[in-house]
Image (cartoon, rainbow, N blue to C red; front, side, top):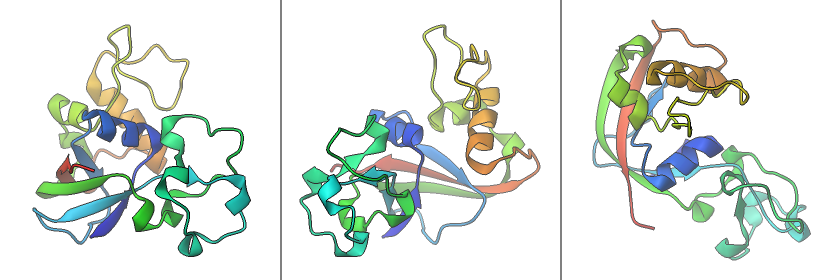
Length: 170
């Protein structure tokens, strides 16, 4: 099983079932039917701040995932998603389809929604670069801001690989 990292909002979209696709600039060594485990930002009780992730033996219930909101008072330093050991991952995905060599600009409105973009109460779609923005009327611009918030810039000509997936039961 291979790891894949997601931001907090995208972890929440996977949990709620609204994210079923991801585009990546680099290929992941996985085939349809293969499984991925999700890495996300996390922390443990502050008593364990000195313990390296690979040596942690705490119960999985003592892990706080920052996608769930601000960490409780007795939890320690925030740890990067890349340091989450597989045994503490709470999300497993099964790849259902892979579409290599697509341009970012080729994304459809349906695919933007499958990427997990958030629809706001005003029915616009979230601007991931500016939380005070009223949102976009078109899903594409929301996805564009999401991409830029993760990768720094949106280049419509950039080739990506599209991974479609389903969340496996926990």
